[in-house]
Length: 346
Image (cartoon, rainbow, N blue to C red; front, top):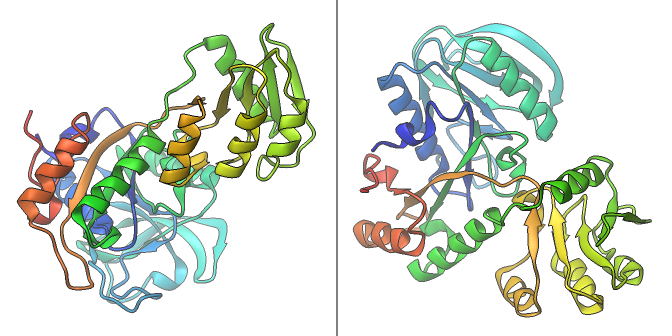
C-alpha cells in the first residue's frame, strides 16, 4: 500500500511534521506530491514557514526542491515569485504579512519548481487551507515542523505524517527512542467521558484554567497561563477535584506541582498533544508519580517516514533502520521514502 492510499480520500488536510531539521520532511512531501499526481488528485500546498528554497537560509545547506504539476494550488510570498520558478496565477492576496512580503494563494500554470510559505497562526493556517479547498483542491498538504506544531493540531489538520531520521541522533537506537517519545506525546488518549470532554473544551475555549469536581462543578484558577502556574493550581486543589484543565501548554514543572499536591486521584486535560512539552525523562518520572494525562482532541498519526541519511555524513543501514522502527511502533505504518517510498507490508 502506498502512502497516498493511507492519506486519501479519508483526509482532506494533512500535515507533514519533521522531528528535526533534515529528517526527510521535504522528501516525504515530494513523494506524496508524486503519488497524488499519479492518481490525478488535485492538491494544494502550504507551509508553516518556508520550504522549496534551494539552500537553507539558516544552515546554508542544500535542500531538496519542490516540483509540482500544472494546476497545483500553493501559498507563497510575493518575493518568492521568481522567473526561475513555475508561473503562478494569483487567486488571492491575503492580509498576512511576512518579512518576504504578503502571503498569496495561486494556481501553478506550468510544471516546475515552487517555493511555498505561509502563516504561523493555527487559525490562519486553517483558514487558508479551507480557501484552497474552495479553489478546487481535494487534498491540502501542510509543510510543518516540530517547533511549529500548530499544523499537527486536530483543529487544523485531519492527520499527520511524522518524518524522522538519522539527523535526530547519531545512534539508531536513540533516534528510534526519541521518535517513539514524540509519537507517545502525540498519541495521548482522548477524554472518554463525553460530559467531561464538553466541560474541558469550554474551559479551554475561554482560555482559562479550571478544576472539574466530582459533581461536575467547575472552579476557575486565576492564572494568566498554565505555564509556571502549578503552585497556584496546587493551592486550589481539593479532595473533590477530579480533573485539572489547562488551556495552555503542559510542562513538567506545572504537572509536577499539581501531582505533588493532589489530594485525590486526578486527570490533567489539555487541548491536544501539540500542547505537551515534557522531555522523555521527566514524563517517565511523572508517570511513576501516577500522572494521568488526557486530551480533548486526539491527533491522528497516519504514518511515519524514515530517512537513514544525515547531512553530517553518517548514515544507518536503511533496511535495518526501517525494520527496527516498524518493530518499535507496530501500530503505525512506516515508510522509507528515500528508497522510493517502500510500502508498509500488512
